[in-house]
Length: 187
Image (cartoon, rainbow, N blue to C red; front, side, top):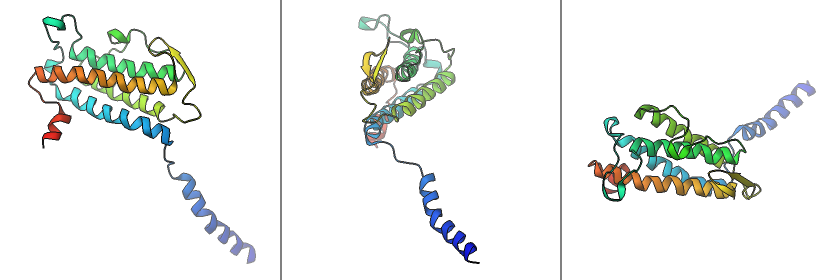
C-alpha cells in the first residue's frame, strides 16, 4: 500500500515538471530582437506581392531610369531566392545559383511565386530564430553575403527584403494600387 501511495505521490509531483518540459520555450532574446523586424518585412512584402493582380505580374516600369529593370514577378522571385540563399549560407550549404536572375526555381505564375515567397520567408525565419549570443558571430561566407557572420546575414536579409519592398511599392502605385500596409494606416 505504501509503495502504491509513493508512486502516486511521485507521479503527482512529476506531472508539473513534465508539462513544463513540453511547453514551447521562448526564443532567445537575440533571435527575437532580430526576427521581429524580419517578421515585419515578411508580412508587408507578402501582402504587397499578393495585392497585384496576376495579370499584371509581368509589369516593369519603362523609360527614364527604369530601362532594363526586373518585372514585378522577377523581383518577387529574386527576393525568394535570396532569402533561401542567405540562410543556406548560414547553414553552410550551397546556395542556389543565379538569384540575381531568379535562381533555379521553376515558379512562374503568381500562385507559384507566392508559394515560393512564403516558403522562403518561413525557411529564413526558422534559421534566423536559432540566432543566439553564442553563435551570432559564427563565420558565414558565400557568394551572396560575402564574408560575414550569422548576425550579419540576418541583418542583410532584412535590408535586402526591405530594399525590394520599397521598389515594389513604386510598381504597385504605378498600377494604381495603394500598398496594403499604407492602406491599413489610412483607416
